[in-house]
Amino acid sequence: MLRLWLFLFDMKIGLSILVILFLISLFSFVSGYQLGVGPPEINLKSGECLEIYVFSEDYSGEIEVSDRWAEKRGNSFGDYDLNAEEEGLDVRYFKNFELNGTGKSKICINGYGKYYGLMLFRTVEGNLEVGTRIFFDGGGIMSRIGGSLISGRVMSDANGFLGRFGAREAVLLSSFAVSLALLWFLFFILRQNREKEG
Amino acid sequence: MRNWIGFSVVLVIVLFVIFFYFVFFAGANNQISVEVDVRATDSYTSVDVYPNSIDFGEVSKGGASDRFKVTINNTGTENVMVSFLINGGNYTQKIFDYIFVRKTPGNDINYTKIKNFNFSLASGSDQELYFVLNLSSYADPIYGDMIGHRVNVTTVVVPV
View (cartoon, each protein chain N blue to C red):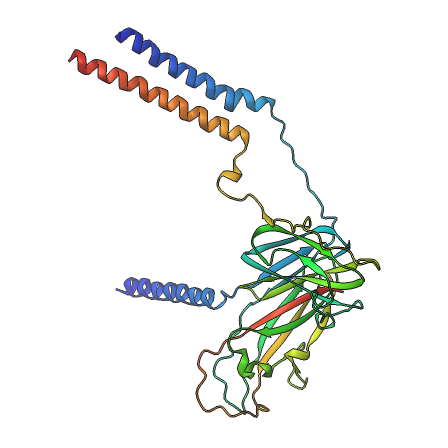
C-alpha cells in the first residue's frame, strides 16, 4: 500500500514537472527576426544599376522596398526626408519581393546632381527595416530618362523541390524509373503468357 | 517463349545489379570529398530584433502599462543607427504616440517618446530597450473602450 502511494506521489510530481515545463515553453515562445542587407553603401552614377542583397535566417515572406533622400549625408533615418520624384531623380526598383533565404534587388537611378539616399528593405510581417546608404552622383548635366533603363528582376534562391536536385540525381532517378518500367513490362508479359497457357 | 521471358527477367536483374554497383560503389572510389570553411569578407548591415510584438495589456488614461524589454542585436559588420517608426493599424488616434522608450531598466531614468528616440549600436553588440505606454499626459478624451488597439512599430536600422 505504501509503495502504491509512493508510486502515485512520484507520478504526481512527474506530471507537475511536465505541466510546468509545458507552460514555460508556451510563455517563452516569443519570436524575433533577423534581417541583413549588403553592401552597406553603394555609389551610383546616372544610368547605372547595382544589386543589393537581402538575407534573413528566420524571416520568409514579403519584403517592401522604399527609398529616401537628402542633400547632405545624414546619420539617422530622420535626416533623409526628400522624395526622389520631387528632386527629379528617377529611381527604379521593384517595390516588393518574396524573401526566402537570400534575395537581391536591382536599383537603377537616372538624374543629375549629388544626393545621399537610403534604400530601405522592410519585413512586412516582422516590422524590421534595414537600409543601405546610396551616394548618387549624376553630374551637372541633365541626363535623359530613357526607355532602355529597365529595373532588374528580383530573384530568390532556387530553394524549391526540383532546385535541390543536381544532374547526377536526375540521371539516377530517370534510370531507376526506366528500369522499373522495364521490369513491370516484363512481368506483365509473363503474366499474360501464363494466362494464355492456362 | 517462357525461356525467353525468364532469360529477359534474369538479364534485367543482372543489369540492375551492375548499374547500382557502378553508381554507388565503383563510382564512390572516384569521388573526392571536398570541404572548406569560407570566412565572410564582405561587409553588410544586419540586426536581430527580439521579440517582434508587445502587448501592453489594459491601460487607462492617466495610467501606464508595465515595462517591456526588447533586445536589438547588431549582427552585421557596420555600426548602425537605430530609430523607430509608427504606422498602420490604429495609429490615427495617436494613443501610440505615448509609447516611451529608455535604455536602462532603473526607475529613476526618464523615458523618451518613441518618435524622438534613436541610438547608435556598434557592430557585434546588443542593446536592451524598455518600452512603456504611458497615458498620464494624454489629454484627448476617450469616450469608448478601445479594445485590441494595434499599431506597427518598425525598427529602422541605418548604417552609420
